[in-house]
Image (cartoon, rainbow, N blue to C red):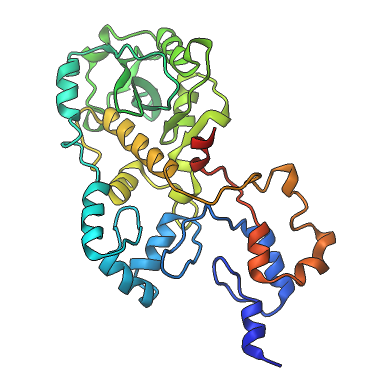
Length: 342
């Protein structure tokens, strides 16, 4: 018997894990949900569950040396792509790194009059079909640990401010958390009431009764709960819970870490909620712009895929090659690249 061929047969075609028995490989494929939407090494084609996992594979403490050597010469440290040459890599990486200074955010803030004394700014862009990013800042209520929304910011995908406002707290504030929020008592004295803020945000999200807009943010579902606003989960793109952007331990990364590592963008102090919006929107757009193989039924939960790895197909599956099993495997999460096909 050719033992090398047998070992190769029991090797996952996506993550390269090896199994002693073919039935163990089938079980692995049944629960791993490998797909073209996973972050993939451009050198060896290994599938990784997250960008952090791919980064470890390329430049971590114990990288795959062959891949590391190529990445060191031609790899972008932000998007982890491999370019054709060292020159292409330098040009690409300069474009790949976002800079809040180059984007003109500071000038835009000044032109809109956003400063310590501002209570609300309506960008006049309530209508539109593109996504919007939301960020909130919270002061403390009760014993100081209760989060109370005190400021909201919404931007569109061109980073234009759609809505920016302080929010009148619904309970007394016991801790303004000034070091992280920059909020002082005078900011909230004449702030917009929560109900008015809710109505304004809902009008933006539901687009005045037309096509609802995709909502982007980091822990944005928590923001909606604290704002007491309901919104369909199918329209929410939460950076914190998106598998490719999570830690290898499947815990969420901070927005500051994600923006710094994958955008080269520093979340700054000051009008930090605006930078949170920009960081979230840029991460979303980067994930959305990825080019993956088009599948008519891309989700494992799609009815057409429910029997791909059914137990009654065990004998058939065990006769398949690892590549054939990968071909019928589907993702267990909605890839944001599909937003461009809607």
